[in-house]
Length: 289
Image (tube, rainbow, N blue to C red):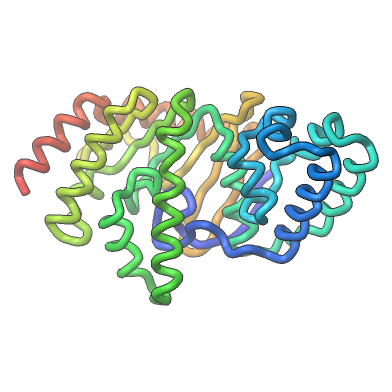
C-alpha cells in the first residue's frame, strides 16, 4: 500500500520541518490506557518492554503519546496482558486519529525507524537529518518559510538532535547515506557551519555501523533522478520506503514498490564514491575552506 500521510519535510531527510511531534489527544489517551493496563498487570516499563519485544524507552514514548503504536504491539500485548486487556487496547487503538499532518506521518515512520535493523537514505536537497550537526540544523530552520516561532525552532532542533542517538544506541543497525556532492559544495550557512558539518560527517562516518557516500557532481549513470528516498528494513525483514516533498510525504509499504526503491538505492551505492573516498573528499573540501 502507498499511503499519503502529508507532513513537513525533515522527518527523515532532514529538511526544515518536523522534530518531536505535537502530542495529539488520541495518542495521549492510548498511551494512558496502555499504562493503566500495564500497571494493572503489575509490570514496570522495564519488565513489560522485553515481553513485547520493544525497548523500554520506546514503550515510555508510546505511553507519553509521543510515538504511534507499532502494528505488532497489540498482538504481542495480548500474550502479556491477557485477552480482556487486549480488547481494551484494540478499542483504544481504533480511536487514534490519522489526520494528515505532523502527528500522523512522523509517528508512523518513527515507529519503523526506531526499531529498524537497516536504514538507508539518499538526499539531494539537504544533508539527512540523522547527520546534521546543531549549527546546520539552525541554518536550515532559520531559512524555513513560513518562519518558525522561537519555541518551535528550539523544540524541533532539540528533537532532531535527540533522534540522532539512534546512530550510537543501535550499534547493530546498519545506516547507509548517499549525499549529493553538490550539497557539500553549497556551504549552506557559511564557511563555519560547513566546516562543522564536514567535521561531524567525518566523525559519524567512523562509526562501524555507518556508511556515508557522496554522489559525484558529474555522474552520467545516475539512478537517483526520481528524487530523495529513505528505506527501512524491519525486524521481520520487510522493506518499507518513505519519500518527502514540499510539505507532503508518503509511506510506502507495498513490497513491489519498496523493492523497486531498494533496487534504485543499490544501484546508486555502486555509482557513488566509496565510504573511504568520501572521507578523503570531505577532508580535502574542509582543507579548502
